[in-house]
Image (tube, rainbow, N blue to C red; front, side):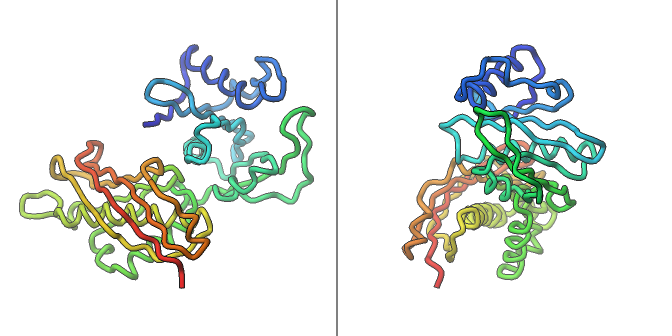
Length: 302
């Protein structure tokens, strides 16, 4: 389990800066202390830690003006790359920008990370390539993202809108049930439902509605993972099992983490059937009340 932390104490900042130096500066021969700059005292900082306190990723945002902010110093440990932590950092830093009514966020991307920032909604600006200090990771391009109303809670908002419309068109009852994508960060997908539209005589959520919400959360994560990897196919639920600890009486939530996904999607590129297993955690507002275990098959697109 990961925790997103805003470092506040001296000890937390020591761990934060030490990690930043180890990942971003030490490999290029820079002395400790070079990881800090004059904007750190004016910036907001975030770090992702494991339950035992080990730092896995860090990032920073500082406000250039009343309308513009800049994200810098995104660093992820080697063992955790490709697991969605950088996307999680981008989401939480952009949320900090929105809280200050920032209209656009800029960053200076290394040439080999432009693809990642494009997936986060950033566009390369038509500016000359910038050479950062010699001996570092090389040239960079300036990128910008305008913070729209729809992507306040979503990574790849157009994909999520497309997925939501697919559910409503192919499974019309999902609209009556109020099942909607609440958040997608690349690291996890959260789906919510409206309790009043799914309530039984005991004033709790229908078991069938809980199962539907969880199934769609798992289906949605598989769909978005295919989009992330530019793959296509037809998703079929092969087997689903759900376990309840208690009924839902408040806010129905289903959350699926990329860390729970097992299987390989890349076989679709060779016109072979893929299969993924995943776990969806079910919450009654903030309390976990059950789990759904889904086995999905993805058939190659015809």
